[in-house]
Length: 370
Image 1 (cartoon, rainbow, N blue to C red):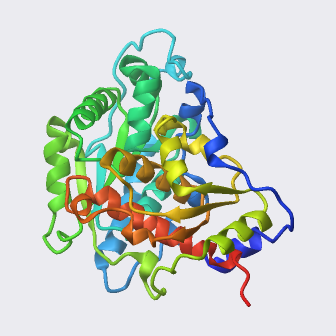
Image 2: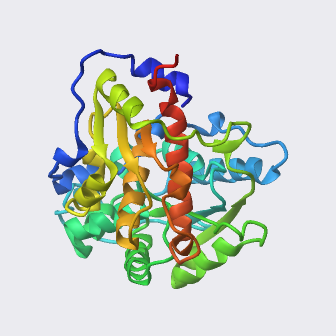
């Protein structure tokens, strides 16, 4: 979304009182977590036809072709017994395992930042011939949050009736969560659920072939035979032909914009980081409900890794919902220390920088120019 689009959506309203993220403590029932496992608003309207492959990257065209065929092949899949499709999966036991089509039951999209993996994953969800309630789409973090909310066995029962499960941003840096999700996926494959996943090649490894694919297939161990890895080459589309990340605005400009734009929030960055520690990450989506823009004053480097990881989740939710972010203080590419950017969670931090930069660019139209 361009700055002009953001500005048109957020026409100035003089005298509006800003909201505050720090004043929100949302409660999210388990049924909402399940109901929200659909492509986020940013990807509501994407389709294979709206993905524009880079003519210099034939792997992008090939990925579209393979995924269209994969979606079409799921039309003949038989999902779990309908009696088990309710939210909490109660009902009679299935008499026999579902019929499984020949060929891999999963695809893994392997590529760097901003090559359109989420666009393609959401397009696969839309193209799969099944009712929305028989398809699930979420990030790796959202899936682990679902397990935390429902429990492992209940999550298995809830998702076993699905035809397709799409997992965006599969995380390879948390051994405990990776084993948990790998075990969950094994149970779902046994139930006949097709799988699709994305992850990111680490920065600095972009020229080294199938680095992320090798990691992914190793981590899911016994499930690797169920996945076909699709390499998607290319540069970050968020920076193709676009200017560098905008410089932060003054605190006065940010505050004025927060009072002028409808449904804008205004928070001190340090206070927001402290507040995030009091809200479970599974509620960060609800934390942003109804926001037209997020305005932050005093952006500074995050103090520790736990805080940084919470900020990454918030950045993902804001990006999914296309909420512009206007800030004063330091630019977003200085949020994380060199130690963090060179550590085990670096791919998360680079993703957050990329997404917050895009949202900051969207927010430029909220500031009045002389």
